[in-house]
Structures are given as structure tokens and as C-alpha cells.
Image (cartoon, rainbow, N blue to C red; front, side, top):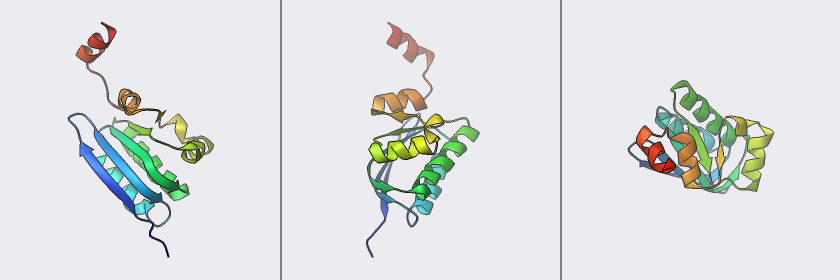
Length: 125
């Protein structure tokens, strides 16, 4: 039997949390990933799944639960690094309507982290 573990690296920033996942997010590994993700859902999360080689319905359910918990706490979740299969899963499950699929980390930060007035003024200048 092959190993289906998911490695998770968590980086706490001042105003958000970045979570990097690698491995296979399937029925065996998704419950542990979901539990860990929910621990961070009180603040904005950027979830980088570029290193996820496979994701099934349980993996998508873990992300959906995290998105719901973020919404409930007034935070946001943005995903970056989704490959073609994962993007299709997001569309089929209509999860892309609740969770932005971003092309870059900068885009994900704009989607997940509320901007301050100073940041907006600097961007407009």
C-alpha cells in the first residue's frame, strides 16, 4: 500500500496564514488535513496546493469545510497553485463560487486579506 500522507507547512504572517500542502489529499489523508485547516480558519488563509499531486472528493470536502469555517468567522480562504484536475473539481462542485482560485500568491492575498486604507491609497497612487 502506498503512502498517502499530506505534508503541511504553516506560515503565520501578521494578518493571514499561508498553508502549503504536498502529497495526495484523499480519503485517508483528508480528515487530518481538515482538522488542521480548521485550526487556522479564524483568520484569512492562503492555501497553496501546487504540491498536491492528487485530490479526491474527501480532499475537496476538507477545503469546503475550511471555507465555511472561514466565512463563519468573517475571514476568507483563497487557493493558489491548483492544477487542471483540481480546478475542474472546484468547478464541478461549484466550490469555485465560494473559494477564489488564484493564479499567484499576490492575487490570493488580494482575495483573502482585507486591505487597509493606507495600502489601498498606496496602490492607487
